[in-house]
Image 1 (cartoon, rainbow over the protein chains, first blue to last red):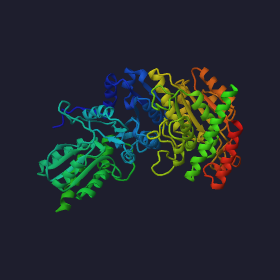
Image 2: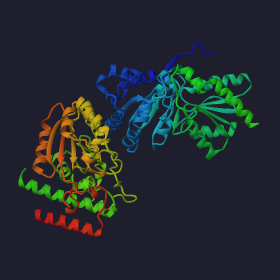
Image 3: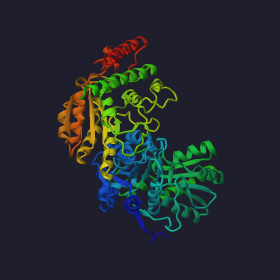
Length: 317
Length: 279
């Protein structure tokens, strides 16, 4: 039963983590592009106004400024919506941050369709694809509050560029704060099972868990893996799942082109070919509407995971 | 400027120009025009203005230099070599396989390069970040960024100009190499960013205009920049593209072309004669 579950948007976790970790890491600075109220870096700004730099509505310049600050030994967190952080500023992220492998952390909020009412211009479903192509870029897409906060601290302790993806929508907290351990590049098996494997990332991990419960009630035992780090990808856990379950279903709030589904398919194609079904945004733009309704309309729901699983199993037989 | 100092700097600038030719000729490609136009200001920066140590390129409190017009890498490499960051002989490896002298500056591998650049408009943002970091941490280093005049057409330059002024980055000096030419021709025929002086003034900068090849003027400009408080300074230097090699001067076709052996000999003969006259 999910009735007692606490819900929280990972962007909130991002802002809170920055404010909390700002005490411990004195060289942590935060940059934003006029979205501090939405990205939640405003929480940090309130606590450490002298370490917060608003760059105005100029994301390209913000990324370059962050690069310059990193050369001087600071750990800048450059924050904006995913659309602008990865999209508009792509080439600056590539050339001024990625190429010199500078210690810049990009906090990209409002990723994916769950932006909801703002519609297609703000629903970024391409950021993971873009960031994956930059050599040396770490990409983290946390599933909930606990994971998001752990990701921020892990990013601080990693030397080099990190792209972190956060959501606007409040989502269930699925990880247990006391037992949870985050390691960059390590997937987490949340549910064991050998009939097939559902590999999910970000906000879709929660949906994958409820899909697995439904499937279990029908006698289908799905393994569920949370891939919080898209790059470097945990190939070991994926190939193991391919070998042991023979069927993979990926679920992401991102285009099926270039994201988790692509990364998993590439991995098994070369390592241990098995069928891979990719649930995600099917080469389309999003549209306005309440977040949950939009997600459902694009098949990003536990129901569609269940349906796709059954089809995939039927195809296998 | 004292006569002896001027003579010394003129000799060094001539050597920097020879290094540019050496690099571009051996690479059989590269950007000589916009490298030669900045040889004098780079010489002044590295030998008179900036606090740095070739033996300790990562010195924490060094002044920073960002070549925002990264295609003028042959000039940056040449001045770094002449200053002693690496052997002058290495300039001949420019753009070759396994050389650290990449076509555009690579901070990860070349000692003395403070920022990787090459994509126009980006270096000035990084320079703002360095200056902002100094302000935030109380460091007293200064930051110098050299841009092209064609580069002023990039919108990112003006995003950076706005931020530098907003944060009162008086530890930042931008230099615009105003040689009037870009790849497709004259600035005024391509898509003119002029009047640059008025634009920077409107963005809240202190503006100085000089003759790029007059060492007295260069010295006066950087001294003036040190007195400016509460705002960044831009030095718009009116330069001659290809300066120092007669057939390259003010000729846009030398923006991104290397001399052949005969042309190289002519250029080196001219520069050697200039050097001999100075010595």
